[in-house]
Amino acid sequence: MFKIKLDWLHQEWDSNRVFLAAIILLCGGKENMHAIVEWTAKKDGVDGTVRISQRDQHSPALYEVSIDVDSPGLYGFHIHQNPATGGPEDLEQTCATCGGHFNPLGKKHGSVLNSNPNERHAGDLINNVWADENGHIRVTFEDDLAILIPSPPEKDYSVLGKSLVLHQDTDDLGRGGRYHGGHPPYIHGKKEWCAHRGDFVRYRRPDLLEGSAQTGNAGSRMACGNIVPARVPAAPDLSCSLQ
Ligand SMILES: [Cu+2]
Ligand SMILES: [Zn+2]
Image (cartoon, rainbow, N blue to C red; front, side, top):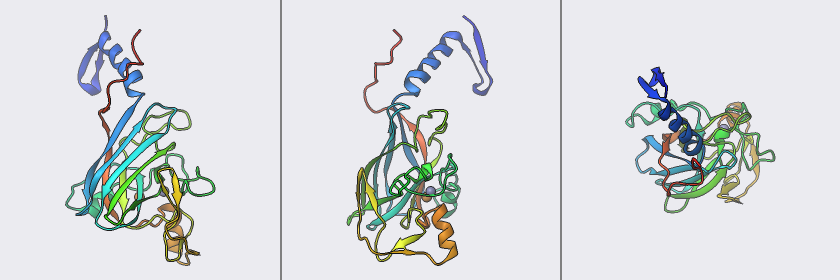
């Protein structure tokens, strides 16, 4: 048996413990990972849960969203690149610390609903979530870019430690315009539908055109929180044993 000094943990571990940690990392850490969003700041009348899970590095991440808001509508919903810091008392300032959309692949703002579904920020997710007449947002979807378990080399990143933001307005999907008098297409789980498809009108204002390619013009932030690891809720998976 040998000892290893771990300066960053201020501890000294023996070889057995290092071996066990490696096994947990390989079996428990890489497989069946779960995370939740811990709200840092949110508007009055907004509350709920967002769960993220991923079975292994070859499967997409599953997002389960259950949020209540104070009025129906289609709201921008993204993962942003920085953790939210600050207190709940200053919503605007706290949610501003989340920065821009999580974009490890250096793409423009886009959407899975566009002709090239991979030309988007990883954090764009399904762009918007729909709140019904009672203000209930209930949606489950999968995402293969915004993942929990890094899968090198082309996806060497994770949404853990990033933040989730719910916006006041509708994300325009980076299309450089709005559907006149109605909502853009919307993906509900795996089902795409159009709420009220009108004529597509291209923005004339340069700031809106620029905003479309960066943020989708989803407006101010009505809630933000951090993506943190969560305990696996189900019984432990025994398929990865030491035999
Ligand atoms: Cu956003
Ligand atoms: Zn984006």
